[in-house]
Image (cartoon, rainbow, N blue to C red; front, side):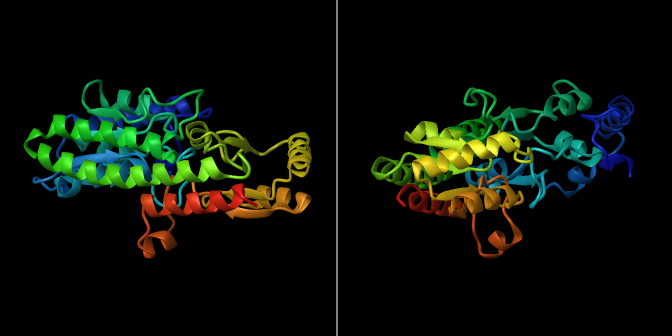
Length: 304
C-alpha cells in the first residue's frame, strides 16, 4: 500500500512526498469535508494530539469541551511512527494540533504539506527539551509545565470556557504535584542515586530529582548496543553492586534480560508513558497511575 510507506525518510522520499503533499492540499482546499470534519462534534474543540501523554494532558484539562484524536495508536513506538494522508487530514481539520517536540521528527514537513498557517500547532515541550532528549513528560515536574502550556492555549482558543480549563488544570496539576513530591522523597532517601535502564527516557527524572540515569541505549529505544558497551555496563554494574535493570513496555526486553543474566541482576519495568497497552487500559490505568507505579519500582531499585 502506497500510504503505509513514510514520505519523510528513505530513497523514495521525493515521489511519496509529492503524493502526500497533493493529497493534503486536496483535503484542505475545499474539496468537501474530511472524515475528521464529518465526525466532529460542533460543541467541542477538535484537537489532534500526536501520542498518549499529549492526548491525556489535553483531555484532562479540556474535559467535555474538547474532542481529542490521538494519531499514534496504542502499542506503537512513537519514535518510529509517521503519518499517513488520513492523519494529515485529521490535523488539518483540528482547531489545535498538539505535539511534544523531539519525538515527532515528521511534524515540520507535515505542517508544510498542509500549508503554512492552516494548522494551529502547539509544541508543548518547547523550551523544555535539552540536549536532544524529548522525554520531558516522564518527569512530573516537567509534565506540570507542559500541562500549564496546554491549559493556557485552550483558554486562548476558547475563552468562553476559561473557568473550566482553569479548574480542570488545577485538579490535574495537583495530581502531578503529588507525584513530584513522592518522587522527591524517594530520591532524597534512596541508598543509591543511580539506575540502569535500556532506553534513555528518564534523563529529566534524573536531572530534576538528583539521580543518575545509566542507559544501555540512547534516545532511540530500537538501537542495539555494541558488544563493547555491554561489556562496559556489565563491569560497571558489578563494580557498583547495581541489582536492577529497567526495560520498557513497547520494546523487547531482550537487552535488559541479557544484561541482567550477565550480572545476576533483576529486571523491572519503567514505563516511558509513550502509550498504554490494552491491558493497562482494561485495568483503568492512566498517566498518573502508571507514573505512580514507576516511582514505586524505582524506589525498590534504588534501595536494594
